Image (tube, rainbow, N blue to C red; front, side, top):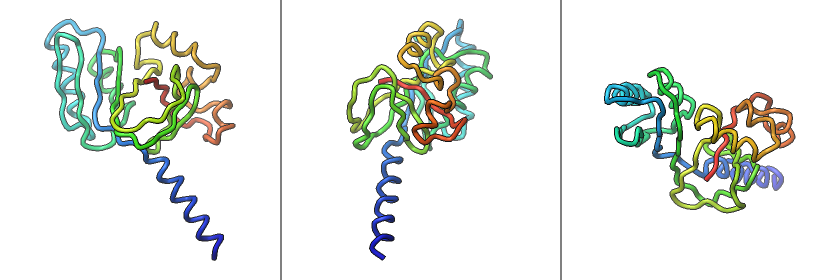
Length: 181
């Protein structure tokens, strides 16, 4: 009986560790926009995503402030922009963190998704913080080259768990988002 209680406590603590953040909004900068019609196309595409509550476009800076009504699908944001005929130049996702330990070249689970932190110091994230997605297709090619040089892990090239990640317990092919602060 004592072993079952300890096992339950450990499982509860590990589950709580996975849910240490809730993403509430994002700031997305698009590339390739030339006019207000381009902005409108992206605006409409983002508003059609089921987890998006509001979109506030900034035509001057080719950016969009997005508020979420539920947990976002980061890849769906990218696909919506691409389906509108454009690309993401930068995507920052803001979340409310509760004592989340992060470090350079380390994988962390947030809300059931795996994030690989690059070019960061070991630190604890508390309160509202923004993380920037630096995967290929979420930043400019030059920025991706810069961030991919920050790790020897192969997952940076594919965005999915490779042999380097499986040592840490991730299943082969698990989606990994590469991020920085």
